[in-house]
Amino acid sequence: MWSGPRNISTAMMRSFSSRADCAVSDEPFYGCFLAHSGEPHPMAAEVIADMDCNWSSVAAQLSGPAPGGAPLWYQKQMTHHMVGPIQPDDLTNCRHAFLVREPAYMVASYRVKRESVNVEDLGYATQRAFFDRIADRTGHAPPVVDSADILKNPAKTLALLCDALNIAWDPAMLSWPAGIHPDDGIWASHWYDAVAGSTGFQKPDIRPLNLDDEARAVADACMADYEHLAQHRIVAP
Image 1 (tube, rainbow, N blue to C red):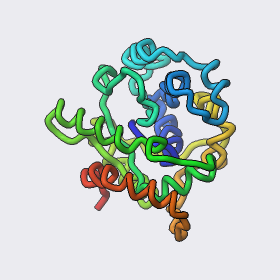
Image 2: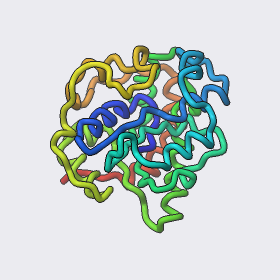
Image 3: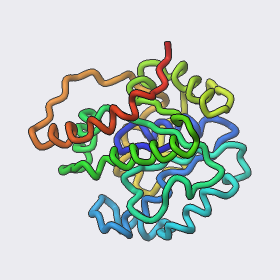
């Protein structure tokens, strides 16, 4: 599942982890990204020390058997991490799907955790490029879900996503235990406070956004890429 940050991506990982038949992995290329880019993310040194930071070996591991022999393996991937040599085609035996969110909401949420944000931090251009690459290779658009649609109607939207991925819908995906998940990355203590306190998908946040000019410019710059993917999104009737 290719996503940007601050996009219910961890809640989606929680959702799939609630299935008895599904293993999950949390941002497996994060260490590679930090070691390659030198970006001053919170806990960067700890993340690099904790993870495999070799692009090729991470890709090989992700293309192999699922942890514990699980029938399904949900890999939570951040498109802004993909600054190295790996393309989605390099992850074999995978079905690719895309999670999107309207940029203004992503920018507002991101700035709660980091003071500054730029277009590259959000990964929309890479997400669009990966989407087009997969669509060209397969001859059809891969599944796209919008976080707002999931929050409005989790059961129906997730059931449609499962159908698009050719896996059975499981109502267990609608809830999970509160707290840190054993498969969360070491960075969970900084980024995952909201989802750690949840036991299911929350109601959509409909409060008016108050973005300054700099943040608004970042959101506006991402809008065309978001719309390119969002036109293909799965919407429950």
